[in-house]
Image (cartoon, rainbow, N blue to C red; front, side):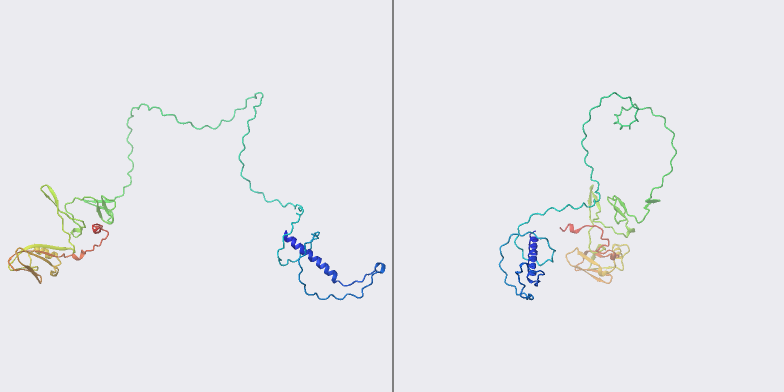
Amino acid sequence: MNKFIYILSIVILTIIFLAAFNVSASPWTEPSTPPPGGNVSPPVGPIGPTGSQGPAGPQGGTGPQGATGLTGPQGATGPQGATGLQGPTGIQGPTGPVGATGSQGPAGPQGGTGPQGATGVTGPQGPTGVGATGPTGPRGATGVQGLTGPQGATGPVGATGSQGPAGPQGVTGPTGPAGTPYWTLSGTNLYPNNTGWNVGIGTTDPGSYKLNVSGTVATGNLIVGGGTGKITAGQIDPIFEIGGEKYATYMADFAGGARVETSGIVRVNPSYIINFDNLEKGSNLWLFWKTSNQNIDDLVVILTPSFEGKVWYEKRGNKLIIYGDKSGEVSYRLSAPRIDYQNWTNLIKDQNITGIKVDDYEK
């Protein structure tokens, strides 16, 4: 509102200035009728052209604000000039009259149906009318059957009647399909139908083993691999009964592959020769040599004299010569790699076998 009054004031002052300049700068026009009384002489000569406008003088001080003039008619809106400095806020003019109400616009589309309001409270029942009883109307249709009521308590059981005679036996039904056979019995041999299956006894998870037995197995003779297989066990303990009590003996462990050993007693005087190329068939030394790798360089010899003295040995070809500094009895112990030692290395092939965990005992 203040900005509007400011712009309107500038427009009015501009109109007044232009009107005054037009009066002072217009040329002389001689009157078309003589002046009344003839008391006005014509001018000496016509007014010359208006000279060029001199330079603008210094701006005078702002005079006191005059009384607010009457509001003139609104002129055409001129081009908007640059925004001047904001003047002091003028007195707010009176509020103009309210304009006429515009014509009503077209009706908008109908909105969707709003949600149904809550059901009102049922009003009180009106008074019963008084009148003569009318005739009985026709009988109405039968209504829907009501729900079945709860079942009553069970009555006491009656006495059992006498048993009737047995009926005739029914016809034998057809034979059912044969079950899935997993085993085949051929003579005294029993084996699974699929040789790729693994059998578990006392366990439901035989793993990768052809036969996995969980529990004690009683057997007379155990043959593994036709006599060439391997038995992996934590301990082998032959049991001996002495005086009615049983005692366990244990086989010694040996680190160094599969080996064969033998022992015996000889007499040196002053020496004794064992010739492995000339041994009595079936003797201990003959069986030892035949089941070894038969390489005398791998032969381990342990000698123990029965006398106080020295004993030693010499390997010469396939001969073992035992010496003593005295005559007397000497016991020996011989050890050599078994003939198939290359099949039994220290590192086993099946690393899935649990075995004895040494780490558990080193903690």
